[in-house]
Length: 291
Image (cartoon, rainbow, N blue to C red; front, side):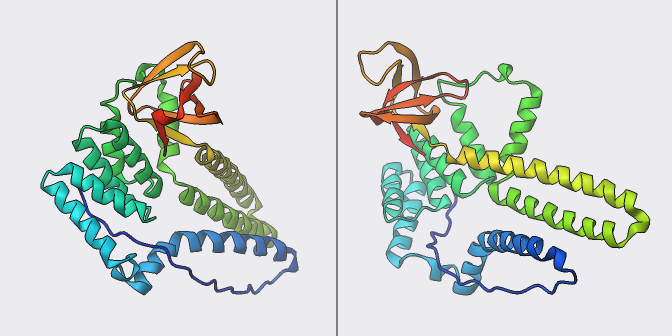
């Protein structure tokens, strides 16, 4: 277990700066690139600036919440996992969606033999702290305890490599990559125009950077689309998937605690869910919780 700061957000103003342009043909392009870069930089530096300007203690929501969070850590270390869970849940109930809190909550649930809620908490922590090694390791270990597990033999090596690359790059990292390629293309294009002695070299680099831009932009769009799909974790021992939204419909499959599904539709207290394998069915809404 680790303890981390519970931080609240802060609102920062924006400082705009103009560009000195040597050629009017680049005005629109430079303006567009500037807007994209400004958005990305503000998003990436936002938490760093908050801590640097305000200090860690100043961005705590309140002393009471800090004390409650630390009390949860003490309960965890003492082995009182029910009390630790209660403390962490109360912190989250105050509206503080902090990755460290969800991580510790997941550990407490796992120690308390509540596998579904442990996986749910780890997934939420991972959304807030993409790529965190501790969260990934604990989530992988928890997933290994599930009854429903994907058959790794059905996934070829190329698919595994692509999945690893996809998981490694966060939305922020992909956004930065897109901006880097845009600026690189602009720089190479200027060299191709104003330094004609090596146009073959500039042309080759331009092709490489355009390819990189298209690839990273496609990955960014796909990852953003994946993030927009609501996902949930099964929390009951067994959830029956049916062919329609009601108990009278044919049973299609049975899912067990900790299984992750995608939500496609909601109807009268039932959810149409789909597994990674493509298998879909209707499950009662009370059997799962959204990540």
